[in-house]
Length: 287
Image (tube, rainbow, N blue to C red; front, side, top):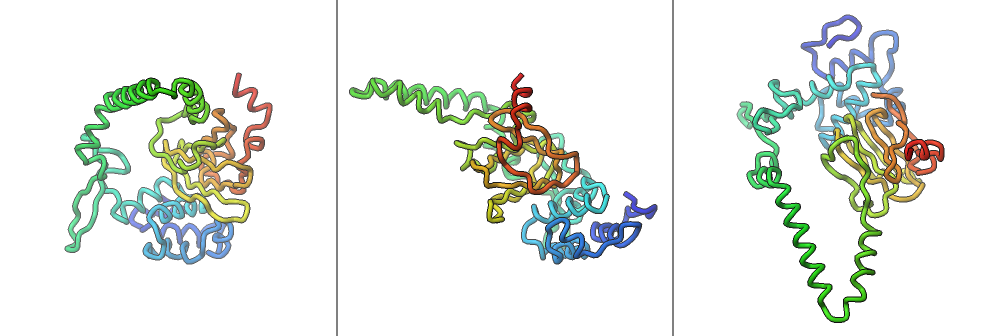
């Protein structure tokens, strides 16, 4: 990695960020960058100094570093990967890739300063591995159980007339998921899933923040490819995307136009079906 023809291979992430901000044609003060990114000055200073304990959670450290890197014209993926290595979240042998046995490898440092491997809990859990391999059996068993329950309810005296109406009610309130472009990795905001008109899915790693009409943050997280977020119903919410080109927006099951290019930060995006999917775009998407 290099910036301004200076070899930054042996530099820390903080040194790279500080060097990019203070040299070249776009030299800026931290206060200026803080206002542009809506990130507190003390957090940007913590990133440059490598004092990560100032920032409350790892997900915010990585998200702030990615947005800071993009603002300074650096490669955000390289910065985030280098930061993860510095923090001991991944080892030199793996850059967010899975090992041959399917375990996600990372490196921790124990009290004696020695490095040791650890594995994601669920990926290393035998029961989770069994469920993942035999998921068809679990789905089939669940479907059979539901069928048995419906059959038992149908034979209860006095409930015959209500079975059809109850079944119809269940069908009309069930959430119809869009035909996502990527397999779903993890779902967030599931409390909104029953009435969400707008669903976000990350196609690339991107920081996503949702605010209500009072400016209160209702969701803030770095989504990785496959992650899904159900936006609360209503037209009172605005979004900020750290990587606008990396977020797919689904409006009532239809894919809406992108809100920006890759690695471009966009804010103030109104989470309204009419705004995100104008009538012409909706008709073209349906065709």
